[in-house]
Length: 300
Image (cartoon, rainbow, N blue to C red; front, side, top):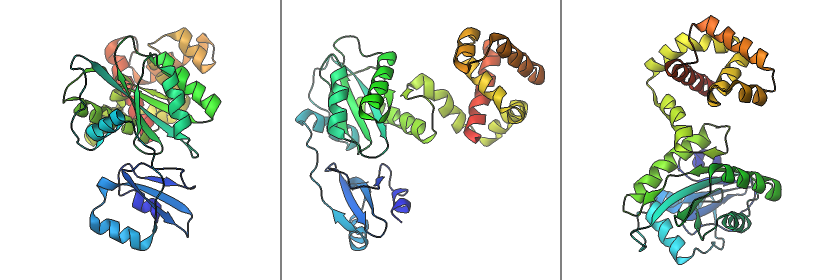
């Protein structure tokens, strides 16, 4: 039952074990019959809904993890429509969102580990037990995508948790920061819900899939009619072509990633071109086929 209730409230989290602490922005309810806990954002519940849940389930109150003054101001500004923090107007900021998969998340340990990778002080706050935001003020060159990939790998090997990051863009300090963050949050939520294979997400990586998902069904059907049949008949061909396109048509790198000989790769590419009549060596052909790959992947 709690799982059904969770689907009604965005950003609610279901636990199979009682969490150690929770944000003061969430209510926590316990279902004794199923031995589950559900955390729901306070702002999502009306007074009537809260009273009903309190009658049906036990409301659990845990010590909340305290935020620093500045982190609390960022939390209120970005997630609760609070006023913008008083900071240097000449500063630039970027938001790096992260998602921790699995149970038994130790927020303090993960937060400490993430902070240790940044050359300058950053603000971190948690939206819930699995999702957090790093707020980085630009004083020097930021961590690169490759460095964040290394961080994700290190956290997985040292703390046994899988982490995915959304690397936001750098924005000047203004009231528009909230809108920029909310849009990036929408992209990251889309990536998490659509099971992207990468643990490092950026706008340019996720936006093509986001657009493909948002296309009218009539347009999707036209693309599928032209190209998806060959992928349905030969799923191995789909994997080969998608990896080839993702690696900028680099045959050597693609063959290496697929653990196949370059001649085998070229045979599969020629086979695809023969069956579809679409070339891959020009922008228009590559763009069209990549769109077909995204739609085929979504159907899977």
